[in-house]
Image 1 (cartoon, helix red, strand yellow):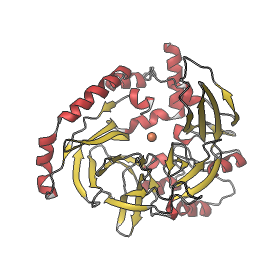
Image 2 (cartoon, protein in one colour; image 1 turned 90 degrees about the vertical axis):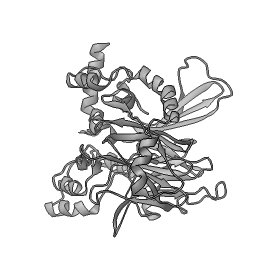
Image 3 (cartoon, protein in one colour; image 1 turned 120 degrees about the vertical axis):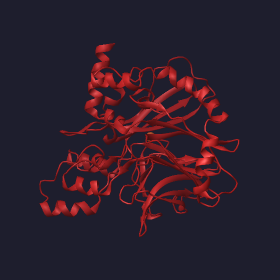
Image 4 (cartoon, helix red, strand yellow; image 1 turned 30 degrees about the horizontal axis):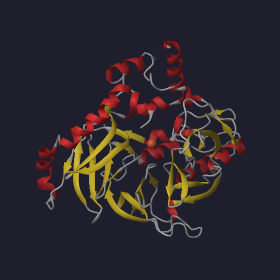
Length: 425
Ligand SMILES: [Fe+2]
């Protein structure tokens, strides 16, 4: 959970209802009864008590007060130092540097902490508009014998290479439209609508697939990172193995190393949310293709064929996949329009405030939807936790009343609120 989610605006800790599953049932008839019986189960309250207190402590500004402050340009993020997001990384730190120690680090603690995130807000004269667009930088904190060293390197993606080479932004990002190529005719621009050049600036996460580490975004391309020196050492595209056009950037990794990713697949019958399984086989043998055994193990049809829900994470418990379809859609018509109108990708996200958020619970045993639950509309990025307890599945979602929080990560918005913080403190 990031500081935005802890502190910004309409943060609501979703009152997750616990969903109880009968051993067998007819889905449409029993749904409402089961849900009414199960709301407010003891397990949920227990979890609220433990985590809720912690969140209350850091979430001093919320709801109407946060909105008022936001409108007035006042500080809405008292616990988030926005300087962090507005710094630019000018160049790689290839030789690890020592950090300043605060307190003491136990000598038994050893290892490397790798992180991924936005690194630079401009290329040449071009500025990125949104934090999601910044070129990815990989960070490495190496902990040895009570000391920590740090190094960082830009992810050498195709997008990064093209941008640096051209010294301008040449690939569309979430909130930034690439500078139009002056050499392209109007007919070439029209044909580009169908070529689907997607960014491969994988700046969201890092996950292990078998014995390899990959940087991920929300397109099926991933970059392999060498954990010993954070060099970019390979590029893979999940589309070569499974039929997906988009994926969540937060997989689940099970204890045995099996990885599950939520993707969106499209076939002749329409788009479907698809759970992709990467079994952990052949680990530690020879260099191998970690994606070769990937397969789609469960599918759920999207409620609207041309408006699939935006996906960033999903839930996984020992027996169920939990797919949360929010009424924030990636609109296919809007995507086509955005290409024609030269608008950034963010313009294809459409919010339907009157439509419910649908939670699908899918059995891992037979890949069938065992429960479809309609909740009030909410926007979310992260499933915080999910587990089974006493015959219930409990999901804990960091939810918002609407998707406005995406706007607070616009670079301009961050600058405004950073100056508000300066004025306040
Ligand atoms: Fe995330």
